[in-house]
Structures are given as C-alpha cells and as structure tokens.
View 1 (tube, rainbow, N blue to C red):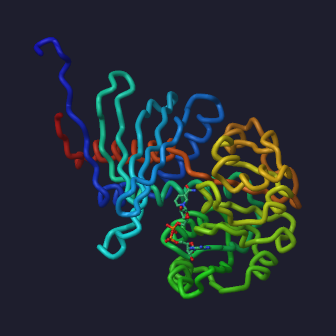
View 2: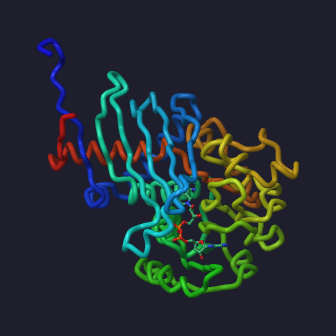
Length: 330
Ligand code: NAD
C-alpha cells in the first residue's frame, strides 16, 4: 500500500446541505452548461434503467452519464416509493454517486431529492431564457404538485412576468402554488384550461397526466410551452397535434421521442425526429432558437442523468470550498 497515492476519501453532502448550498442560479448555470456540452458531443447520458422491483410498489433505477467537458462522472440511483407519504417521507427518493473520472474512485455521495427538484426547475427556466418571447408577461402553470413550486420560482426569474394563471386537475392543490406566486409578488388567478391558453405567453406543464390537458386550438401564437411532467412511456400532457404544430426543442432527442412529450406525435407520424432540436444547440449558438414573434416553441424536458450529476457536483464543490463536507474513506 506504500506506493498508493494518498486519497482524501469521499465527500458526503446531505439533503439539508444541498438545499442550503445550491441555489437556483447555481442550478441554472450547471444545467445550461451541461445541455450545451451534450449538444457539442462532450457529454453523454448512458441508457436508463428503471424497474418495478415487485416490493412496496416501488420503481427503482439508475440514470448515469459522463460530462467530459466538466469532468463529471456518476449515477443517480433511486426511484418512486408510493407508500412513503404515509411515513412522512417524500415518494421520490434518490442519491447521486460521483466518481473520479481519472481513477474511478468514488468521490462523492450527494442527496438527490432537493437537487432533482431544483435541476428540473432549472431545465424549464433555461428553456424560457432561450426560447420565450422577451416581452412575455403572463405565466401559465398546469400542475400544482411538489415540483410546480420549484418550476414557478425558477421561471419567474427569467422574464418580467406580471401575472400567473394556473389550472390543475385537482383544484384543491392550487392555493399552495398561489401562495408561492404571492410571495414572489405576482397576482395569481385560477382559470380554465382554455383561459390559460388564451392568456399565457409562457406555459409550464408539470403533472403526472396520461391524457392531454392542453389542446392545440387553445394556444395563442408566440407562446413558449415547457412540458416537464412527461418522463415515462405512456404519459402525456398536451395534444399531439399541438406538439406537431410547434417548433420542438428538448434536453435529449432520444428521450424526447421515447419517453417525452414528443412520443405521441412521433408515434402517430405527425412529427419526425429530425424536427426536434437539442436546446444545447441554441445555448451554443448553433441554432437560432425562436425565429419569429408568432412561432410557438415547445421544450420537451424529459430529465437526463447529466442534469443530476451537474448539480450534485456543484453541491460537492461548494461543500468542499466551505469546509462543511464530511469525508469518509472506504
Ligand atoms: P406530485 O405528485 O407532487 O404532483 C402531481 C401533479 O400531477 C399534480 O398537479 C396533480 O394534480 C397531477 N396529477 C396527478 N395525477 C394525475 C392524473 N392522473 N392526470 C393528470 N394530472 C394528475 O408530483 P411532482 O413531484 O409535482 O411531479 C409532477 C410530475 O413531474 C411527475 O409526473 C414526475 O414524474 C414529473 N417529473 C419530471 C421531471 C423531469 O425532469 N422531466 C423531474 C421530476 C418530476
């Protein structure tokens, strides 16, 4: 062992530290950078594993990847335990493992629950920053669950919104989202789906829907829609005809056509894969993004492992810089 290099051991960053250390701006910058790296071919996601384990009704899996540009290698492991709520725990549970890409040694263990929420919010925020009209004034929210509050906070920082309109299949959930809008100083109005489409300049959908909640004819020209809830085969938040009528951007084309919002338009043949642009191309300046004030843009945010690794590596770095990181040697 004498000749082995000294290692400092691995860093452990818990949920509370992630929440304290990683702000919305950190998440935005990390997600924007990794989307750019993906579009340049400098970062790759590996095939996703997601399995029903036949116990506790749980879905368990891995999202993994390597960002060569940022030297971030790792895996997010976890899933969905529907009985957790009754135990006072979040149903979604995950942990990120980061490895040293030069040696393969485990470098960090980072709580993934808060980071998943903040990186998903950063994703729609990045899409708004790059694709929404600069003069967007009304933000439409479809969905009012745990994730919706994160999406709203991050979106509100991207444009000078004057109002939030919202609709949710379970209307009793809307007041909690309204309280967040109020905290942000934005008037909040619960509306019908048609009213939401008629008023909103930017729409975020973040539900667990398996049927379209927004139809093509309800959406006005110039709208930007960020579809964030559809991350599994069979899920759907907007009409396939609406998707086909928009200019479609995504985090990753392979996921967009298989588990994302575009899956249905692709399946019915109204959209082809070559019409879907990775948002990283817009970030890198290789694609102009929105081409006119009337164009309807749609971001299919499917959620990729590299987003998780990007924000986890920020958490590990900030904890180390602050000197608050716990270290353990294996
Ligand atoms: P949540 O359970 O807190 O809220 C669920 C939301 O979906 C609520 O608005 C609820 O009213 C609505 N809903 C529930 N069942 C529905 C149904 N059958 N039809 C229509 N709407 C229904 O969940 P959350 O944490 O807010 O997450 C919302 C969705 O976002 C989930 O489907 C989750 O898988 C997805 N998600 C996606 C990403 C990504 O990166 N794309 C990341 C995190 C979560």
